[in-house]
Amino acid sequence: MAKKTMKKSVKTPAKPAKKQKKAAQKSFADLLGIKEGHQVVCLHCKDQFISKLRNQLPTFSRLFNVVADDKSPDMVIRFFNEHADFDASFRWLAKRLAPGGCVWGVIPNKAALKKGQKHLEEAMAAAAVRSGFVQGKTMPFSPLDQGIKFCLKKE
Image (cartoon, rainbow, N blue to C red; front, side):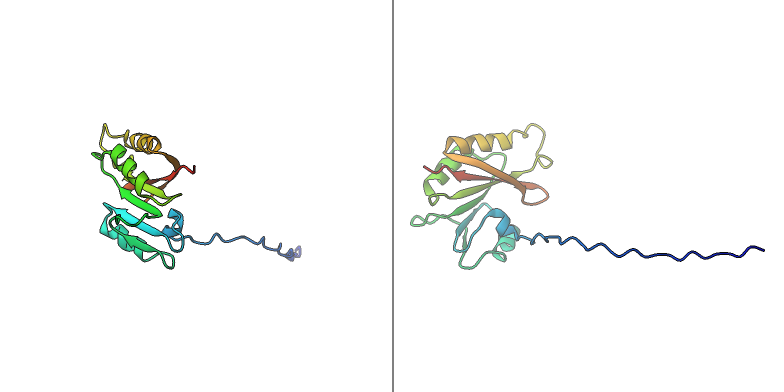
């Protein structure tokens, strides 16, 4: 009878793990670009959105639901519906924002739009550009809403 030979398993030394930089989880306020001390105005925003944002604001930042006559906010978050007058809104916002200020225009995303309303994003972007804004990044605000960032052109 032949002897069974047992193979010894040879363990190779473990390779040193590559140091992976963990991407710090950014808060929603960070993703929006809200900095310490910013004055942010939410226009036509949903209550759930406001409470989510309020809990994440950086130190000394303030959240308002109206644009006061004597204040120029650093950022405005404006929820639009499909019947909004984008031109009038962006002209008004351009006059009210602080220099270098930004507007997040929030509209229903393409999945939430009804047939025939797919032009909403293009209409909003065109109105913002006509009012002196530059289009920035786009990101989801909720499963049904998307936001597009517009900043005033620096002169």
